[in-house]
Length: 505
Picture 1 (cartoon, rainbow, N blue to C red):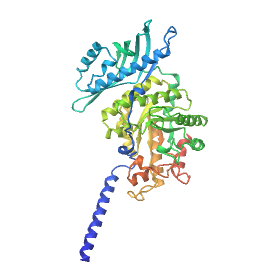
Picture 2: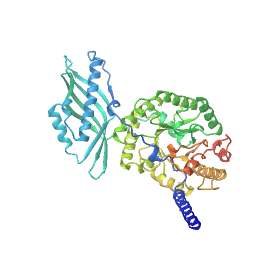
Picture 3: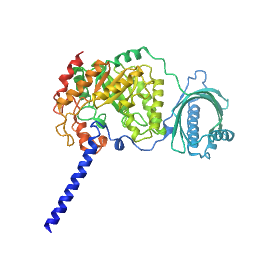
Picture 4: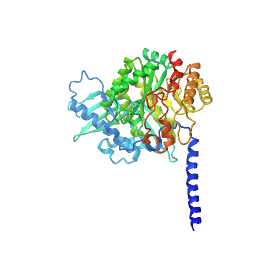
């Protein structure tokens, strides 16, 4: 009896060991810098109200003294509600609510046009610029033009294919006040373009572009508040000390991350904006340049979320457009990883739309996207100002990526690269400071020989790598803690003196 029990115990123990070995071996084939666990942490699914975020601007009205604030605001609010109701009708195919905001004849015309579509149509407008054309003496009839409306549309076909377009419209609109409600009687397209020309580049744009190839930078979080804790636990004293350390090591630039939710999904978080003010001002005082990466830990790519992204983009770009420490903007960190969890066409449509929107806002600073894999870095290469991607595999693969990207004749930046110096249960004794130093300096040497900018990952080792960002696998989290140039005890690792010759030149 005892022998039989022992036999079953041995079999159970062997089964457990085999299962654990299979889990470990399947993870080994995935290289250690896998980034955040996208399925757990990148997207929030909280409700979203589109009409609260679409902005309306009126052009100057110097000769329109009779145009009171109350009437103007009442017209604008009603006009936004008209757009929301129309967009909802296109998506739900329910036109029953339209008669509150649109004349019956106009409803028929709009509904007839919707029936030409071969699927469900999702639409969103990001802003409206209105100019008054006529206001009746009794204030009951108003005619205005709405110019350069960014209308983004996604057509979902029966087979699941999504077709996306961005159109810039000019409309002439007639609204009539009836029983206290403004209603649209005329909705006439007077102009339509498939794209908008980017603003003429300012002279400072060329100055900033000339600095891209000279980037010798580092990705930065403070040591005891990385990732999602960075802006929550922001300490101005620590930031000044760290940026001074970066400057003293010889780096000329840093890359930081701007999480969408931390800076305000609907209303801008001014407390965190002031922290970003401090970081940029501190960098400027130390002679450092900053490349902020927008929309970290995003809320998805659904069309309904666009106004949240646009509001934050517009606020931040306008606020810092003349800041001397700002070198460039990174529109999105590793969007190609999101291909796995979202329809790739939807992600690419989002990127395409926001590249165009950015260029309407900033003509002084270059724009890039930080691709997780160099094989995707050719996407939008003809539209972006410079190409950047991340690399954590062999040098030969990096050389292949650079060779392939040379066809675009664009400045290149290896925006993340590194090697963990701490061992973990999967790779016992394989990760050492010496191997880290060899890997990092090999990449930097290659970058120097090929006139490529670079930003190492990362300044510090970290006490923890949260499962909310990197998932449950302990060997992944262990690696993420040990990519730093500076250890947990504050000492420089072997890679630092090896980097010095490259930072001094």
